[in-house]
Image 1 (cartoon, rainbow, N blue to C red):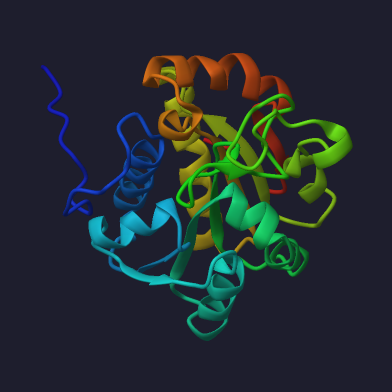
Image 2: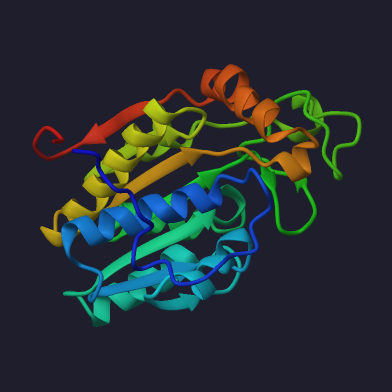
Amino acid sequence: MNKIISKPESIIGITGYCPGCGHGVIQRLIAESIEELGIQDNIINVVDIACSYWSMDTMNFDSIAGPHGRCAAVATGIKKVRPKTNVYVHAGDGSSYVIGLSETIFTALRDVPITMIVVNNGIFGMTGGQLNLATTPLGDKTVSSPYGRNSENYGSPINMMEVLKNYDVEFLARGALFNGKEINKTKRYIKQGFKNQINNKGFSLIEILSNCPTNWKLSPIEAADKVKEVYTKIFPLGVYKDRGEKNE
């Protein structure tokens, strides 16, 4: 019998994501995971004042947008006063690893039981495509590095999974979206992050390598190929830390 696939019921509107952007795929994976776990009536979504902000208009969840870069801190505050609520962050790498680096680090340090989903597209997308000190590959041209990123002026990108795994956190994993196999694997990581929170196990962060065709000035197919050929070499995929049992 053929399986009928429909959109998650939690997605109730159309977003303004650019064509080919990975945020929309991530949004669907989040909604599917939440519905499959049956927790859609007990969710608070914390988004950044950036691309992920669109999900506030699209997802049928209680949502709040914190100041740029402060998602982890806002989510921590919500979790402290509503510990039985499932709180998740949907934010970018600029928010989480640059402007909000301190907030992300201290949330991990305290092992706050939230689910943090970080979209790594190597750039500040919403504000026009500026260089991201944490994730822009060497040589890439951006509006703030028109001659290409070099280590002398801008330093080199950093694998934040390697940094965060030094803390006593529950779960760290990195997925990608460049093909169906990796999308399915990424969904398993997201779902595991929510399972950990349901069981009050501790801090989970899932980073997702995503393409940004608009700011990269590439077609969606070319952008997906860049993620596969360039980004996965700098930011290897897989589970970096799993304090609990083996994932299902």
